[in-house]
Length: 368
Image 1: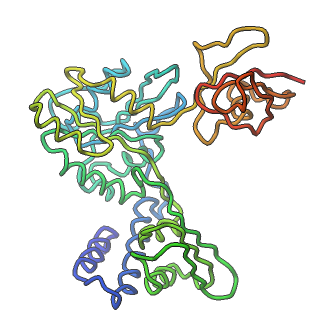
Image 2 (image 1 turned 120 degrees about the vertical axis):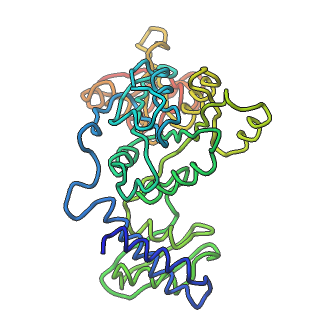
Image 3 (image 1 turned 135 degrees about the horizontal axis):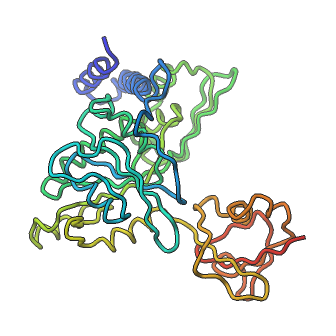
């Protein structure tokens, strides 16, 4: 029996099992078994990890990458070509794009790489249509644009989310506030600082048992934590990526229908062919990437607002700033002077390497 068949059997059994306290242990076991089987699809035991392949590995450029994911013929290539000026094969039939096509768009001075991925099909996480390679590239992106046809957005949205979830991608979510710390002895100790509304002790023990974890401390600090959240923490191979739903081809619908589309969370309706609402899409992309622009100010001169140093949130310290310019600068730093949101006062603040910068700060480096 193949891994895909085993997954289908477990999913069928879960659908047939009533959800109550008496079945929580059994359902916990099934969920853990399912996660382990899906892990085999993400990184098959034969080696290789399921990613890459001819046309899928691309050189990464820019400060961040945005992957275009969607079913065939939804307009990804047209949007990519117009955004970046990079030619991505466009035609009115399915599977025009057969490899990853990279391009770059500059937003607020920051170079951002755009990756046009081949159209995925239902069953992609089971490697139908080379889907595993496509989604493996999506796992490495900083932001995912899920491009949908406005004439059937909700159905396609659900299918694509399912494919990405099955490959360990968690969209618009943060890592669960759950700690699982293994130890050599002492059994299983479970503590929670919030009510367990979707988890119970039996279900937790069943999941730990399936992973052969007999001695550990489990601390749950997340309201409404689910068995899937606990499994994600144990598996440790999930990626948490922001996603924007790009609802394409709005030139084909009415104003009344367009108003309904705006009710879909994290969505931006556009027309790539008619270049409608692209400015909003670019601004939404910028906000979702949450980048930090830092302007340099040589001593005795005005700040350079034309060429910002762009950093990623969470890696925006003075040391990161120095390293992005040249590796030796941090070693030579005496102190830095910072103006802007991260400074304590408007006249500037002297700081060291560990100071965290905010967007549009101005920095002067003083060497030893």
